[in-house]
Length: 230
Image (cartoon, rainbow, N blue to C red; front, side, top):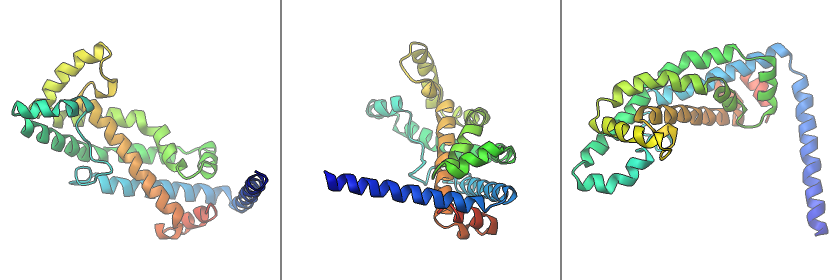
């Protein structure tokens, strides 16, 4: 027990020293450098995520973000297959993922506007907020508006699949009774929300890569700022 206490105390001391050293390093940065570095990192991470998702098979060919059937349809899959609707299920999966791939590029203006609007408080939160602070910043600033922007385009694609229309008709009634979550009440709302979540998932991956190797981002100012956070 005493050994464990000593070990825990040592860990705490090391952590405190590390944080103090990190804070001292960050204090060497001018506000101008800090803001420039953070904005460059935000833009780099967002653009890289958009480039990976907003292309053919950006969703459908990536198991990390591929959009599966809504849970209610997945549960009903065996019965739907028995009734000869297996092809429609496959068509719906493809349509949902193609819709997401088409919608994601629409996120760029909103993400870039979020970068431009970064306040001093936002910058401090990103610098001190841990490994996902960039992703958290984008999620806080854009999640609601992105879902709304994706919705019409996604609906235009998924409405062309017969099973989507049938699903919406049934789930709309079930949702009013509280039998299904609101996000799955329609195919388009389900896909829009999954697409937004996928975008943040990929931004998080890019953020992790920048933090692990800031110089690889190809920007001196990103290397300078995030190099101090390592």
